[in-house]
Length: 286
Ligand code: A3P
Image 1 (cartoon, rainbow, N blue to C red):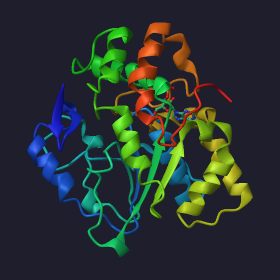
Image 2 (image 1 turned 90 degrees about the horizontal axis):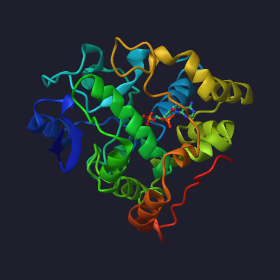
Image 3 (image 1 turned 90 degrees about the vertical axis):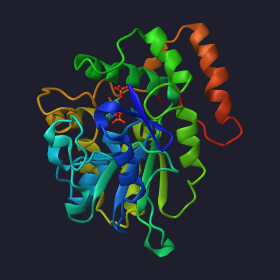
């Protein structure tokens, strides 16, 4: 079940007051040193968030309390557990904020010289759809989410009837801004191919000079295996023992889920829409 908040499907577990949530997003004051890690769900948000955290903290590993999801609000009576509710205004700078908002709904400063930074991460949509399907199992447990088979979920995904709507609209909205000096556009598959050079790329974007030793250590700690060791930090709900944000962590897992018919439909209705934009993805492991 979703609320339509500023034209975006937001799962109703985020708030029971969509109008207040919309106001909160619209009137949210960014700070020049904020860093937003933005993505369509299941594209590697947690991964990039952890890399950014470690870049800012000399390789220290984050803890559960340090992943700030926007817009989860302390001041709307939403039914998320307490640890998910955040008073963003009270957070010290620099705030590292994770969000799935579209480009047009993401808060920005009205002052051009005062813009914060946005790191967007995109992933090939076939793996996104599979990852998203598995993620819905968490909401299923709460009796609040999607409860059907993959075959149906994949159709909902293609038709944009999932949280945060159409994958292609989301990704293209941010892709158009990729040359803005305060936007870094990353791809999940590139991080897979070469994590150390992407850690360096992110650090450069954030104006942080890190030694090779530290870059390599962060890459090691942020590998799938490395993050699994700390999986308790990346929970959705406080009572979980494992993280729904670390499942398989591979490129190409979609192949075990896509029939030739589904693949054809996906190519026509999802991939066709990004043709000619210059945005391309790897669908196979490197
Ligand atoms: P899978 O479900 O395909 O395994 P998000 O953080 O945006 O919700 O994305 C979650 C996806 O990113 C999951 O994909 C998860 O396994 C993957 N992921 C998280 N950390 C990763 C890492 N260090 N390396 C590779 N993939 C990672």
